[in-house]
Every structure is written in C-alpha cells, then in structure tokens.
Image: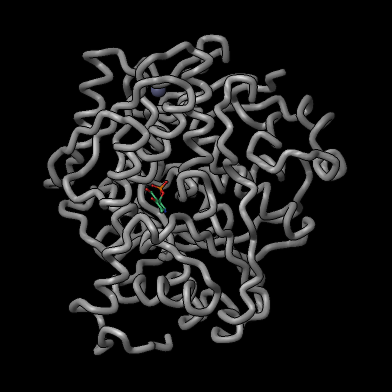
Length: 414
Ligand SMILES: Cc1ncc(COP(=O)(O)O)c(C=O)c1O
Ligand SMILES: [Zn+2]
C-alpha cells in the first residue's frame, strides 16, 4: 500500500499524481520532485511500538515512508548498519556521547545503497531495461549491483580518476562504463553525458541527484529513522554529514521532517554539512547566506575526498533549508584533516573509511575546536564509504608524500 500523496516540483511547484510516475519536472527546470506522503495514513501503522515489533533490518522496514513497494526491490541487505558508540575516539576528543553511523557496512560498501535500492526498485516497477548514472563511483557501483540483481543494463558515466576499487565493482557487476572528462569551469562532463544518453536512448536516469530522480532521494532518509531507533528515541544534538551534491543531507533532513510530522521526535538535531576545502560552494553559501539560485559551481574541484567533488550542489536548496531550519552549520575541512580522520577512525574504532566517508569526523573536530559543538553534546558522525574502495590512498598515507615521516614497517600511533 502506497502512502505517496503527490510529488511537487521544488522549483515551479507543479504537482504530479503518484500514478504519473514522473522522474524529472516536465518544465525541465531542474527542480526536484519532492515526494509528499499522507502522514495521517502512515501514522496508523508507523510508530515506536509497531517499528519495534518488525523483524526486517533493511531499509524496507520503513516501507510506509518509501515511494515504491518492497515487492519491486532487489534486496541485498541495504541499511540496518551499526551505530557505534565511539568510546576511545570520544575519550580522545573529550566526548562522552559520540556515535558513528557505520554506513560502510552496506552491500556495496557505501551509503549509496540506500538510495540505489529505492531508485532501482522504481525502475523495476516501471519495467525499465536500461538505467543511467553519473557518479564519482560509489553511486554507480551501487546502481550496477542492484541492476545486476534485477537484470537491467546499467550505464555508468564516471570521471577519469574514479578509484580502482569502484571501477572494479562496476566491471564485475557488468555495467557499461564511460569515462568522461574532468570537471572543467564548473561543468560536470559525467552529468552532461548521462543526460545526453537519457535523451537519446531513453535510459531511466538514476543518479543520486534529486533533480534527475526523486525516488532515490527517499532512500538515505532511512539513516535518520535508524539513528532514532538505535538510540531508543533519545534526543540528538548534531549530525555531521559529508556533503557533495547535498542529496544525502537532503535525505537526512527529510527523515527528520517525517519523524516530526509523525510526532515521533520533538526537536531537530543540528545538521552540519561538511565539504572539502577544495570544493565548498555549498558550505560557502551556507556561511554567507547566499541564496541557492546564486551559488556558483566550483570551477575546478580538488580533494582527496573524490566522492565529494560534485562542482554543483544539485540538492543544495533542500540541504540549505535543512541546515538553516535545524540551526546547523556548514564547515569546510582540508585534505590533511580528512586523512587524519581516516586514520583516527581506523586506529581508535576499527572503522576503515575512504576519505569522503571520513570527512564528517574532520568537520566535528573543527567545530569542537571553535566551539560550534560542545564536548558534552550527543553527536552522530555519518561514516559513508569504505576505505577498501581506495586502498592506494592509505598506502600513500603511510609511504607517500603525505606520510609525515612514517616509514615502511614502522608502527604508527595516531
Ligand atoms: C562516501 C561518500 N560520502 C558522502 C557523499 C556525499 O553525498 P552527496 O553527494 O549526496 O552529498 C558521497 C557522494 O558521492 C560519497 O561517495
Ligand atoms: Zn518544475
């Protein structure tokens, strides 16, 4: 049973019936078709007790608040990831209540599985044979896995420097891979090539950007539901979100609003967007109060956090609303800080993250030092992608130019 009431374009306000199954606004205005639910209907079935009695641990556990029936889903075990109370890292940072949401533990080792499980299920419902994606690697690898399970062809448009681990996943899952040019003057060649292929061949677009597919946006919000269930509905003070296009943050915010609408939480935690210093158009806009429409894409994004290099924050409108309504913040972090966070997550908590996945921790450390977050607060850091996808980065950290004097074979304490 679907509780989707309608979809509404975030730019022009055009309303769509769920049965129209729209993917992009027909006005071609790059608005995101926000999914609106019948919360009264949902609330009859979705509450603390009813959730507690459910057995499934994957994202489909929250089916009333998803825009596609689980019957169409390829289920690989997406979601249901651990929320780890980081005692050792917390002690180092002087925090008692630091929690790490370990989304490296998804089927293809990044949080994108939440999005792609939903986006691909919609493609199955619509009987699509070919799906297309533009991505730095994680979302593409994820869509390729779900497409394999559904028997759909996946066409992935990736940047020239996508990591070997992500390309290996794409190859093995059987995706067709098109390596596009590097971002130039703020133009993302992967997105342009994907849109051209969608136009020309009629592929179903399923990138993890809201304006090109509204269904997948609903997947990552399950992180929010899980956080509250895992903490037994206690109040949280802040959530740190590694941010590229802003789609993940948009999901976290949507999840919070859903829970508020259903009266399952009373207050919002502050949402903090964390971007690398070499690609921080959204963070700058948050800090300066620039309206979304005036954001200028980063001309030549650069960072060790390859998953956070979208030059343009496609979902920045909703992301900025989420940050401002929760009295959150935007923070940028340097590559050295990101790499230190990779090291700390592993050395203190046993979590092996890729740089993009560890950036949230770097953001927390910056805000702890400038007072933006207090050491007594209850804070969740999202850890979004596995370091096994980019092992070269780690080896470089210990042996390459960023090694900081660490020689081969020497033990290093963080
Ligand atoms: C590991 C990882 N973390 C975070 C993000 C950021 O997500 P978004 O682009 O939705 O802001 C990405 C995006 O590719 C990613 O791969
Ligand atoms: Zn529109």
